[in-house]
Image (cartoon, rainbow, N blue to C red; front, top):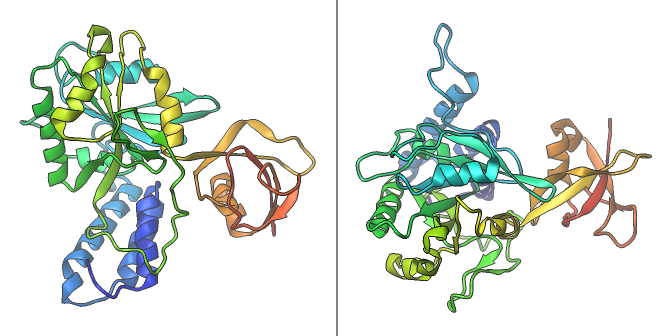
Length: 357
């Protein structure tokens, strides 16, 4: 990583990591290239940025004239409160879990490699939805060439394992190794989870920042490393694997938060929605039009530390750019309090946006 980089570069890097849409990532990459120091020590990073800019431009422009897009989409555009990728070895029950949680109707088979392409589906939780992406399995012999690109929009991952499988530990080690070779890390740390040493399960905490850069922040060595908060799902708990979760964690030498679940019976699946909402620090914000009741059926979602302007961007980018102030019900000192665009929103807030237009 280059030294003596500007605050503008640091902020562009942070925003790139937080960007969910291809166009947003492209703009951040262009800012990174514009603000990075131009010297020999940054030549490789400059080349990497330029390559990613080229790839994103091609993705946004679509097939060249006269060409045809072959096969299904490999990178699924993020929707809902968060995108979570299902990762695992062959025949661990990923697709069954995905179908049970999302009712996607995706193909399920008793043979390996039933899933050939990313399969999206929406998992409801209260009045929000999480987008679950069922990815093809990873094995010692094979991983799809586009697999890493498919993980780029993900906010988190669920690593599905079958504790009853004799080679379970080796399968997980292969997944960790193959992803690490492509600069993807499956991490135990979540924004809202503190892993405890007493095996009592994850404890929910509030320790996220608002995503801004300060002088004390340390830059990550590789800005394109993909660090995914990961939940270990021990599937097929109906066959008696629930007691093996702690043993599996011990054998793997990992402190990934873990749950025993069953795609067949639904056992343990009720924990997933509350876990994801708390662990990813999802904040639900409702909007209202002046003079009308608030729309309480479909909230906009941001992360803890999100602002009124962040919500406005989700409503419409033009509203965000011309936003003057908002009126707030919920987290303010009084109902209808006028707040600035940079006011931090809280879960359950109702806001009324006022712009120049």
